[in-house]
Length: 154
Image (tube, rainbow, N blue to C red; front, side):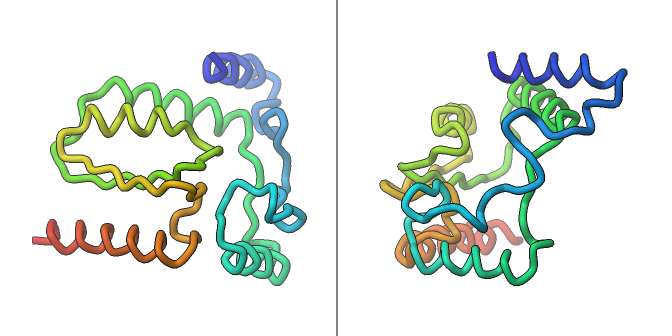
């Protein structure tokens, strides 16, 4: 429902050039420089969180901004088109934190269920950025990624 609303909003804004503006509730600052670790939804690892903040404070060009309406409309259209296609006949690995709050965990699980060669690495308690999570999560996920690449490199 929200995807349809954003798509319609982007389409309506395009003739007026307003689709180049930020999507509602977003803006030029992702908020990481001022985000509190305790309420953040990126990682449970304090050192990794502090490192991300330090990088952005040192060089603000590394920070993410919000998406434009045009980008959101295009992304939603592409996701719908891809969701309608059969899963490709290639191996895939999905990583999912048990405390994921940025993307839909159910959508990820649904896609994995429809992808015969897909595997899901589930990390209870982990948040969105698995490669910036606590050491055990990061090492396990990276090990699985590297094993997938090594297995299918030939």
